[in-house]
Length: 218
Image 1 (tube, helix red, strand yellow):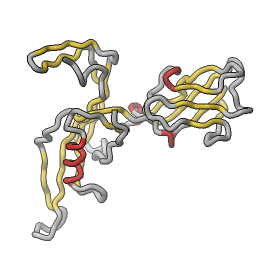
Image 2 (cartoon, helix red, strand yellow):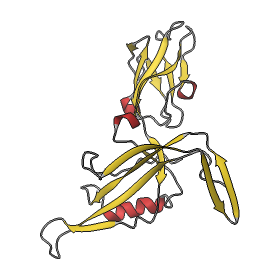
Image 3 (cartoon, rainbow, N blue to C red):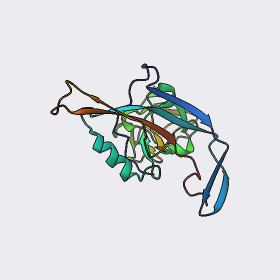
Image 4 (cartoon, helix red, strand yellow):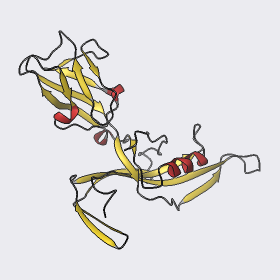
């Protein structure tokens, strides 16, 4: 998985038809490749899908930047990270990380429950028995690891026996493009229509959460 973060802004979800997010059920994935067919049962029961429009140039990126981003991912082949616009698809509130025993100082996110691995470290809040802890080496340190972050408590801040450790944060989805041909583009003038006016490109994009087994079915 690539840890490159999606660099574009979808049009606001408040504008009807410009953006949507949904969780769709995924029970079986089928694919044919080189005259071979495969049907895989996925480990994940639902996958996140975002659909919407982006407008370029947006002050930072030009249409050619989008084309380069797609080409660098080989269309739908490689994944990247995307943070959903709607809170319910990007936030964990007081997810269980573990329980103190008076001696354990390191707690991996993969050991907890109700956690997502691709967190935005800048949004992380850590609580021990409901009390907010201070990061940056005061009460704990956080590994710089997208895929399985590790919280290590400092001496003097080791969670006592039976004390619950919980976390709140925003996270990224690991996604790929739903399609790589992007056939629908609208071009409009950004000002008076003359030869010196930069055009605005409106592109429809679908992002689909990466699912176990979906990439290499044979």
